[in-house]
Figure 1 (tube, rainbow, N blue to C red):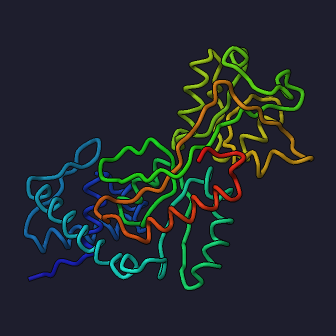
Figure 2: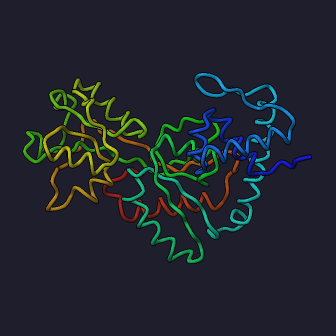
Length: 307
């Protein structure tokens, strides 16, 4: 009788959540043929068909639903066991995998990494960037131990631990009539055209909501993949956008900056925090990581963050 492996269960668990071979393979970092082979081996081991192909994707068979439920439980237990050596200690040790939005990590985590290296020299943090939407899926698939992201977090299987609120600032070119103003109101925005990141980023929704609220236009012929791309478009006079305060401090508030930023009135904020699978419990290592990030934010960015 064929044996069932944890790899098969993890692969099937990911596939059962997204119900698409292509997306599941991407999240797992493997090829679709490799994923298909592992699923076929699992079906052989349990002696039942687990998935049915439909025009719009896959559906679980009754046996597939049962195996998926059992697989999620087993993987949660294994996940807790894997974190036990780290969680048992008051500090940080071993290795943690952190996923983060590229609109957050580059402007905060270098300072955090420096502090962690000084405080916990044996600890290793592996950081990988990705869009907000993909981070949640990758977290649930086990690619990350925890993620640094912003609300909303669209999964009941994820615990969100708030760290700080970050203002969003209006970025305009230097010859824009609003440049140099102390603040910009909704009425000031009504005649502007906004450009935004692609929909995979939560910031896309925030920019779109503000443009709709103020009566401003939203460009549909361009969606950036980075804050730098948006800034360059703004500098060319192709529109305005919102950028986070940490990005503004790092890349805009310089003598040679090609754009300028203006606070909004009333302020627009985003809530930043750490998130992890509820099945992981509340490991002391995760709480210590949150403490370290918040301490760095308080010590070095208190002037631009709301703590």
